[in-house]
Length: 283
Image (cartoon, rainbow, N blue to C red; front, top):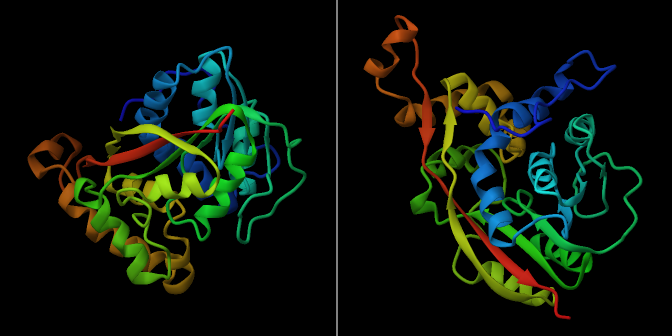
């Protein structure tokens, strides 16, 4: 899987933690999974002509790659991320990221950034599986300047996402909200209208999930956070085993992996589609 050519995108190990297990899942997100959403980030930024005139706030910015891509276009960027491990990785990339004050069950939070408004507020990753999406969208609207824009992103239709059967492991082994709960027609629009926003179009973006091997695929999917309740209920080993089984249809044929040696698994690739909505804050 090709790396993203943006200065500073490599997640550095936060000092003083010695690479302990607490940072394992966060580093897997930053180093394996995060880049799978780059086509989504780039499509939104191109459509909205993000540049030097843009003041961007990323709600649930995770380890900050979306912010880095916007900053590379000249935007002024800041983020809020309730997960401490991800927040520290984002700060290690030189980004201004606070704990924030929106929905964050069980998260360790701290002082939030000043509640200033921005010309663009993005919610790229936190809506799928959210326990209270209406609250999160309302917070995004509240942080947007009059005449500004909010971008909400979710998984596309499950029939167009090869990861759908893999994500079912989270529902079988835990009590997670389905990540496709907001993917139906009109659902995002309704959330936006309830928050006082005006829907202004959107789109579907192809975001293939590609991994060099099965182990990386398991680690990347676990890093999405969608399997957290499954791991708590059934244990990491069992969830990982079921993930491996569900990923088998997407492993490259044995002939394609022959160069890796006997018994080696080939690359893993799943075609997925994500949907985004642009909503405007009335002037």
